[in-house]
Image (tube, rainbow, N blue to C red; front, side, top):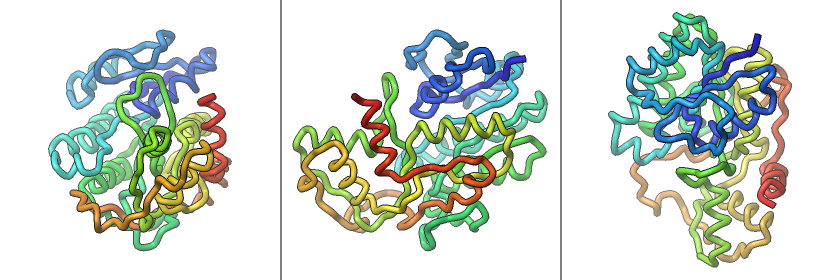
Amino acid sequence: MKIKILITGSNGLLGQNLLELFLKDTEKYQVVGFSKGENRSGRTDFDYHEIDITNKQLLAEKTKQIRPDFIINTAAMTNVDACENDKESCYDLNVNVVKNLTTICAEIKAHLIHISTDFIFDGKKGNYTEEDIPNPLSYYGETKLLSEEWLQKSSIDFTILRTILVYGLVNDMSRSNIVLWVKESLESKKQITIVDDQFRTPTYVEDLALACKISIDKKATGIFNISSNQLLSIYEIAQEIATTFQLDRNLIKPISTNTLNQTASRPAKTGFDLTKTNKILEFHPKSFKEDLQRFKQKLI
């Protein structure tokens, strides 16, 4: 029997990477994609459904017809300032959808894999473990924490993969990410300003997709951290991008967070402890520098 996997947000960066990964082994996996609009993946070898997953009734009907063994929920509202400005839409996609998927999973005995974020933390400590106490600074972080708490109170099999600053490239992207934005700006000889007082461990999207697959293959449950293994300031991240792609580092100017006047607060220092991921998932993410080299090879 094939393992049937439903991917919500299959048009997104992670969604399309998951398609690529699972469709390499169609003897083992059967893949279904849910997303808004037409299929943007460039692939026709999977079952695609155009659907607004915030429509509770439609989501339930479609999912129960398909009866997946696993649901990977990649759909979310992730623009932190937009979440602050449109709390209703943010709550609908980041919390209500998870509540509805949990109910469906309980009925059809499916395992839910949910993507969460470092923004559930306040950034005072850094190098967070899965057991550290969350304290979100933004509405986006609040909604992601609420969805985690809902899953933890449920009776279903679930996996929460927390991640940080996901980057990569797929077919027909709807939005950019830090690596592409810095690379394209510097290629255009554009001077950019980058904060030097926020620290992160960025995540290559192929690693996050692989972590989803490992979670399925191992039937791993609980919370796991997925990111690169070296904490860098966002300014250092931009410098590393410039170096990797042989672009002018002098175009990158450091600034402090408080000069930006952003709508939502960001945690100053996150980054993840990957001990549990290394041990239980047997997954060993590398440094941002090494991941960038892999990404560069993909672009050639």
